[in-house]
Amino acid sequence: MVAEHDLSIGRATRAVSLSRAAYYRQNVDWAARDREMIQVLNQLVARHHRWGFWKLFDRTRLMGHAWNHKHMYRVYCAMKLNLPRRVKRGLPKRERQPLLVLAQPNASWAMDFMSDALYRGRRFRTLNVLDEGVREGLAIEIDTSLPAARVVRTLEQLAQWRGLPKSIRLDNGPEFIAQVLADWCGEHGIELRFIEPGEPNQNAYIERFNRTFRQEVLNAYLFEDLDQVREISSQWLRVYNEERPHDALGSLPPALYREQVVAAKSSTFELST
Image (cartoon, rainbow, N blue to C red; front, top):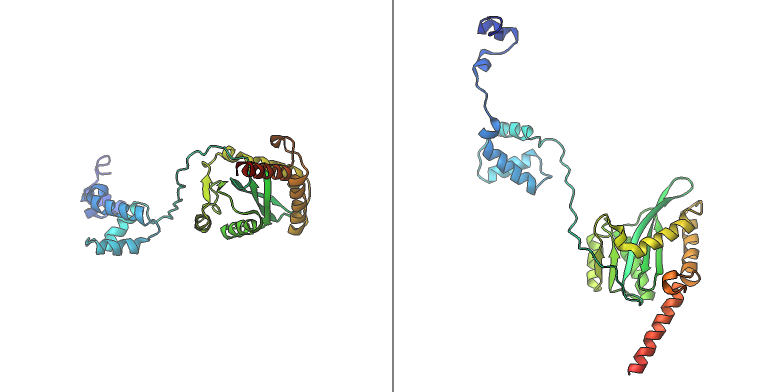
């Protein structure tokens, strides 16, 4: 208005409701002016991403900075730190584990979750446990929720009649990376072998078991309640272990193959002694 219409500064500022002082004020690069404050805030937020403004402000005071809280809040908002911050925990780096197991019981187990729904739409989950060495299904735990504590309880129940494995192969689900499972396995000398994220083929034995269970049970029936799922799954698991021939085991059922392996091992031990 001043340059194009040759108005005076007073008339132009009154026309747009701008104070004359604001007209004469020079633009300031706030990022350069508040560089030190920005660096301190970035460092604090990186370490304490759940802290709000007042905790950050109090911490800067304890660090010896005497910044005004109004000034600091303007910078805080300009950095968009007043918006919700969501930070996901990154998974630790997983090394590729060779899919090699000894052909003997309890050398290595595998665990995985599956999910499905009842006829009325209610969702449920299954925790499947497999002995990789003899391809024997050890447990199919079924419920609407299976937290890490439930996983530990299932393993404790298996230990009473089966013993414990030397290692367990599993993915990076929240129930499997929970500290309660890590502590329990550490106490019992069980190695946890985590597959790489997004690589289910590294847990191929349990994935093959899951596919058979999906085809022959979950996709084959309409379930009315969880008791019905448990009953049918239990019957299927018995048939899978004791009657169903397994190609990788010389067309023997897993339970019969396990008995032969144990018997052969016992005979070898007797001959050596």
